[in-house]
Image (cartoon, rainbow, N blue to C red; front, side):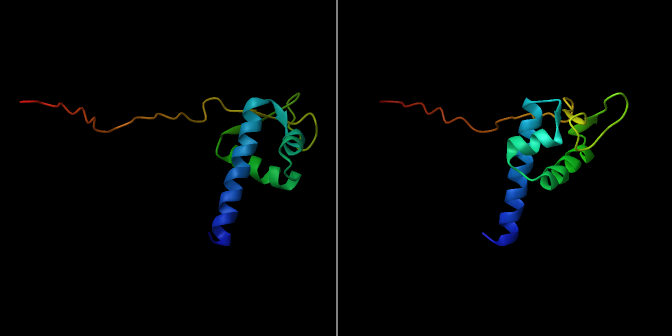
Length: 100
């Protein structure tokens, strides 16, 4: 696997980690996500900004003021961010045996 592929995989894993933490602990601060994930605050900030841009997370304001990197600045998970529908399409091999 190339270095670029490894970096892409690592970014994907980190984003999934941040999202899982946010989903199970919302509302949560960026600092708390960094502490729970073991990622740096800078990495968490980049990931969170991307998730906010994609409308998966949003910054919940405290008294109408959103504060980054303070305990008061919390993130919440957007429950309508996306839905997954899984459908299995296939053929059933129900073989009938016939004896003469």
